[in-house]
Image 1 (cartoon, rainbow over the protein chains, first blue to last red):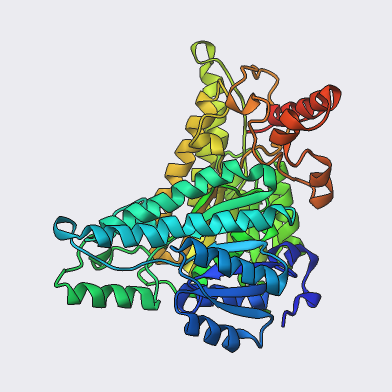
Image 2: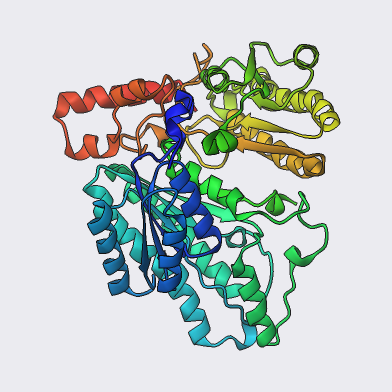
Length: 269
Length: 238
């Protein structure tokens, strides 16, 4: 459980005491790290994942930190998203925070990519962010506001690796959702922001490399150049989770529509 | 404790340059969190900044955080803006930031790292007020300085970033400032209301949702009062 009782008052806005958060793609990697951190600072957390067993297992694993609920949810499926948010409302009364973290990590060469590959990328990253945002807004409007954090990528703004065209396109779409929703729902007291991670040590990149190896593609591009990262190291997921926590918390009460790069300065180098 | 590990600045030695409301609030927040923060209320010239930084390092033995919060505003019509008006904004907003980084970075490099934060403005990337040529250019230059410093000194363990505030008080405007209007002056243009300075209590007295209130909510008198308050705030801000 949280140890917020002993916090200095100045840190109180950085907590999520009593808030209900739904995090997609939370069975592993960045989503799981974010769930653990949110629980540490007082939130109740709905762990949603395409892998329903994984979601339940992670919810059970983290239950010692605070209230959790694991739900299976394909974010690209409207009915599944609605069911997941209904489960969240049934368990905790409704959602105050949404973290759109679920992503598809397949890689395909631009010149021979199938339309199906292009479509599933956009179905998970862009459509999934839209569907979850819409259900979250419905619940947040009834709770006096909320905060939505979309996990984008530095590659939405700057080429990192290729072949990566469908991923970069979908993540740029996520940032467009952030900008528009920030303006559209400000009147509802809902803030919407993006975190744009750089390279991170999670299962996602491993899956990406495996998929690419299976397809015979070769990863190339600026991010593969030795020494290209100014800080010279890959991020731990918790370093992204902390940025997500800031944007989700009241400490960011005037931050709306921001695209926060957490990339070691890669896009400046 | 998790939060202190993430956001805590206990025992950090922090120098905030520029006694703007943001500079004052930053210093107070750092000290409330257990840091040793000092506010340098100086005119940002070469000797004054070098002296402020070296005296700080002499007192505390190190400098973990440097915040450059100096902000000089001023909107002037371009055809009649004097070179002095142009230079004064650049001296305060850009030249001073360079001098502060130049004075700070050697000490941070020697001690193995640190963090530099420059207070820029949303007006550096998005049109906000008419007549903001000198101000916007100086702050856009500041963004460029921040990017360059971040790249140059990442290997020294020094992170350099800018914060781009929206409408927030910056103190009294210069007497010669011209009121020329602009996008930020349009009723309802600010989505989420005016930023807080003195904490939650003060924020709650301000219109939290001016867009909706102005168009759908209160009567004409209330709308005018809220509008006047918002305008007043924006005129004295970025």
